[in-house]
Length: 109
Length: 112
Image (cartoon, rainbow over all chains, first blue to last red; front, side, top):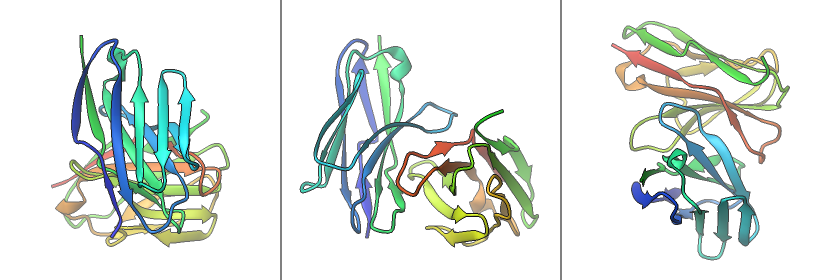
């Protein structure tokens, strides 16, 4: 079966760095997405990786290793507004997105 | 307004009733999707559409019906609502099959 694993919850301190991991087992691979979802709101796109390596976008970076079935989202200089759930999703061989259950990130002052 | 909008935002219905959730996008995106989101689960795809008059089942299609007569609209109908269909429903659209999806605000549906 297809499976996406990410930690259920993480806690970090304002100003610090946090890494949210995602491992996957899917039928084929056509890219990995990270989305941010604040409580009660819609998911919003953060990043897309299809090749191995690191993609940097401001305070957020996303890394992919296809051989290991592994990705992480790195958030630097954490701000209170970064408190949200972070969703990992993999596009399989049929171009369907398989979603992880999300990681709830709690930021403490 | 530009974007993707869902209506209603909140809905309470009774078991056995038919209910339709609306989704409208103004970008002329080819692809549209319906997901449900439940605690402890990732987003689960109900149905998707690659273009007007083309729809296909996702992971959890049972009990749902969709149509897409116009590119901009993609309504989702629960033919006979059950309590297990209590959920938050998200509509999304994307330009192509492997580009970022844009989500509507969601519809919180409660079946009593």
